[in-house]
Image (cartoon, rainbow over all chains, first blue to last red; front, side, top):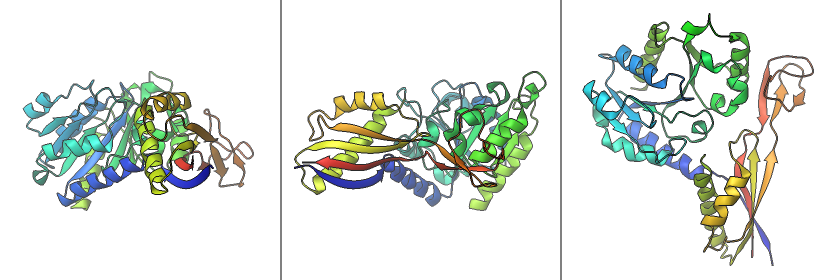
Length: 219
Length: 113
């Protein structure tokens, strides 16, 4: 005889539990961590490099690389004097909490203030998988187009800060900022937003200063 | 895509709950999946047939209860299903709307013998 057993359990609950454990590890070491997500080509790598530059001497930084296509590989970060770990995602489309759990102990957490995690370049999946960082950051970029919040609502729902990169291209690319921001506001009311150009450096100070404030408020 | 990891989670959750009631076999798994959850039913079914093999969930039917996206207008109270071009309220054109449905992603129940 068939019997129905009610369950009502989130499918990703095991990942969520692991993410909570990661958060405990970070909090125990008094380290703030951010999870940077974006589509391929949005400028994640150059933005992270510029952010590292802007924060140099203000915060003690560590880097976890999840994007296989990145150019800040472990060697480059170590050459810049930063502790860095490369996660081999084995071709997965996103980082998950278990991958971060493996990477965290490799960093000297007690000597760090901020860990920047670069997620896999993808606008679909990463936001569904919490990894335990304190903040998810999405980098949108002007050439991607102003319709991305409408096409990828999940990503815009799951972040606590939004960087709009490549604003130096605004004069050359059709991009309706009001339409873009309207979609963002509906999906994520009041989301803090930083229009920047990693290339020209415009807006980078505002982003870096805000990040320092967030990290220090956690101390 | 990440359907393999998702399918593994569905299997783990189902087996754990089936064990609790000492079920001999899982006949069906009932999933509730919102429109905003990035998941492809066919891929889950494909992986399911592979990874459930040899467990008491082998051959179980996967039922997907798909929940369409729903938004509610904060100005006029109208509820509607958005398209992917604009989220504004189709009644009063207000952009002040909020998501009310479509983010579900859970195992609702299992049918066991």
